[in-house]
Image (tube, rainbow, N blue to C red; front, top):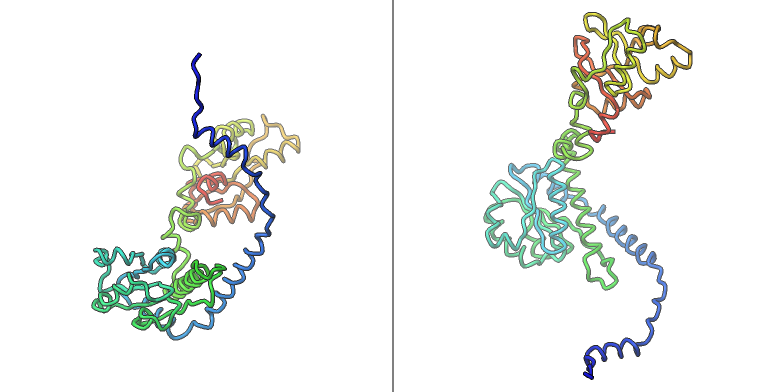
Length: 348
């Protein structure tokens, strides 16, 4: 009979698992204490920025408004992440901007910066080697340099045309090491800069929507009634004098819960909706003998095709209706807009 020898490693692992002390349950900790402390520290750090908005901030805005090119935002590490967000915020609020990695700038990406641009450089210490290396090149280009640091006496701050002080007394990190409060203040200062430029440029909600065509705001501000309404044969339509029963077939067939009523020349004379039908049935009307003219709404709410879809939705909400007829300047019926069209378009 063959003897099977156990694997020594398996035996050792089993022994370890058998003799290992039972796991001790971690003592409950109130993590909200740390969270509240962090929030309070960062709130205080942001609050301290207000007193630092002065001549340098004014100069920074004027420099950025005067350039013909783009704003280049740069930074290393966590400052680089904040720089990317600031660049994105500037670009979406009327100030063309993009992020350039300072390390890559030293290896070819410096060619992305032209003499018509301006640079915003972020570094909490103001001494990041990758940024310091770029300073002679930026000065040679003769372009405006705006620094955002926590050290006004640093090399980066000293050579800048405008310095924005984002320094903090201490990081929210209990070790005072991880960039936390300092990155928050830099982000807020970047937002302050972007909004000041936005207002100075007269940037509108329509301008913002143009930069965000795929977003909800973009749809609300750019989409028009004519982009979503039904037209042509899809419009529910019956002639005046049509019996109610026949009109109901048109309502059911077109699936909009209503029909328009037109005269012999095709001009709109009224509409009939599901709501009108319910009220008519409550009154005991005969669907076979009653003519649609007797029950229709003769002055329905109207919109034009060029109206913003969001405005049409407001009219629906104010009047508690789900359908609007669309008319052109000559009062010709051109379409029908239902609230479901707005829902599908992401407006409602």
